[in-house]
Image (cartoon, rainbow, N blue to C red; front, side):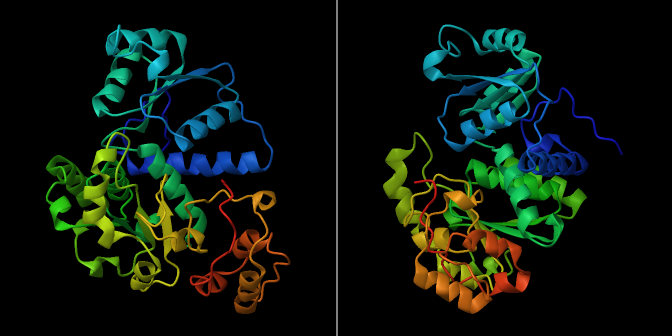
Length: 356
């Protein structure tokens, strides 16, 4: 069945059918292939998009700005200090004005009602770049990454979200997995399970009944068995810094480390994190340095610094891949077979964080 999303806002994955989400994923694959091939996009030529950020961000801002520019469009960035939204002007008036200047609006902030009202009053498509209860663009990006690296369809994949299971990322994953017929477990302390929004659970249960998804919450480490992805998020979001000691005490048993990865019983399990992350806080540093880590999926060969040669030799001994001075380690891994990846789960790449 043809899919036409022209003029639609992207506020939550719950607004879309599985077929529409599949279309968005296929489109994402296609656009990514074109960029790698050096093919310039034209779909947003002559279009202007405004980014409204009540919460600052590194990845979200860069992702939206790069995407719009790649497709030929122009971007205007407004943060809390450079607009009157919610101060001298009502949200409704701001939405109406922006809808007359711009062809699309991206919002990243706190209240889900704000992004919904922007869509209601602006008259142009609005895209949710994060709210307190959802982060749909992140889930699309994560599903895209999974499809690039897991040799089975999404419906056969199991995602375990570890830690603060009543936050926006966990809810967003529940929505995405329910829609795509996947298996999802939110793994965290019972005290947090009891605080999960019952409305979210009802919505997810209704969708899961239609798609065959299995979505559950558990405090039992047995739920880790068979996971294809262990996923985590920061324990204290922006504006919650005062809660860090309390969250650390509660969630330290749910810190992802190599032992937790091994407990899945899946030699091909992957670790993902939406970032930013406090290393040795939500995670042990080791998972970020393992070959199984996709938290930094955009390694580019000429940006990877020379690796520890002893680790490169270990890598070569196990896989039979000659990586020279280590600069080709990442590409070599992804050129090799699934069997090689099975043998790599305990081998560190030795590459420093390329973002630093």
